Image 1 (tube, helix red, strand yellow):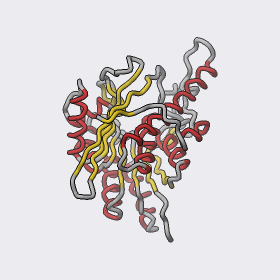
Image 2 (cartoon, helix red, strand yellow):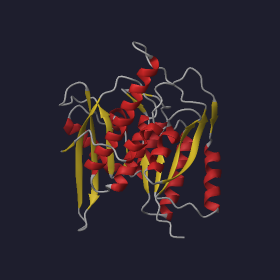
Image 3 (tube, helix red, strand yellow):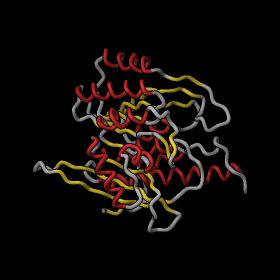
Length: 309
């Protein structure tokens, strides 16, 4: 059968209610025309920011069993693999094995990895995941989306200037990935303190065999609310838009960050409307307004301009 569709294997959390992990990534990718095969690394009632949550966790062996089933039917052909938050080293190592096997079957497979380790100077996954990401995961990844803390942790280099950011991205390229986006940083924005600075870097192989690197910087409006699932949506959108613009990181990032902006704005106004004047919205009210943002996901109005460095 002529299967020209793009297939994504997404190995992430599942929640019954709300939007994180696979729930945050699948719908947007499907809307943009991707076939999404999801393996749910956990199945929880809701994300863990609520007062209560219950559910099950998939083990590395159970992940292997599911993959074996796919393989036995000879449908283990993928164009992309997408992974996010994981707490277990053996699970992560199994993911690496699966990615390597899928890459042998399809050398053009692109592995998009959000190396979730922590934020603002503290880790929120077990310490022993750090060496696994550094030595095993990042080397097989093609696109990575660390925040500043994660980029610093993976390279052992601090970012205090734009030059540092570029050097860190170059170090990350040397580790494996051809596309690196530092999703947020503490560097001073030119547009004022209501913004955050993000950076991107993409190594491209030219037709004549030489390599060139495009680097961009983009300033994103800050949001004063805690959202869950935004990182998962971001990685999924970067997958989609780099697929559509494989050699134009500037456009891919503008589209990705613009989608994020529209979804977050819609979520904030809904949450404030539900909570009422002067009241802090609850985690349930702050769940991403994903279905309501379908049109923005398909064709985002570009609300942010990236600068080529």
